[in-house]
Image (cartoon, rainbow, N blue to C red):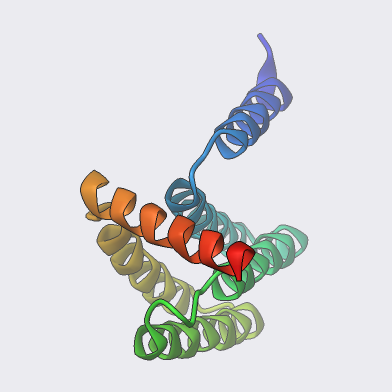
Length: 146
């Protein structure tokens, strides 16, 4: 009855409300999920020869991956940040290669990498998240008092 536009509007509003009330951990989860979804959409566009859709989906996936890179906190774990930055750079290069070559196997590889990162992120316990938030609050309080 509502068609695709209604469903898309609902999903968009649902994501916006989720983001509005989300903690930083949840925001990263949503970004990872969004990148995976855009890559899957782009893969489907390749299979259907929808080149404009492919370009839009892959562009959005790269923008999300860049947002993930920008969200990295070098102070928390410099070695991990270096590794993730390198991995995110690799993903964007591979997405561009897949876009040009129309090779869905490359997209499958990037999706697999994102799923591994998301799986690890999803395993972070509530206690560990709370400890990180408390540490961040202490750092901010120290910066304000200094």
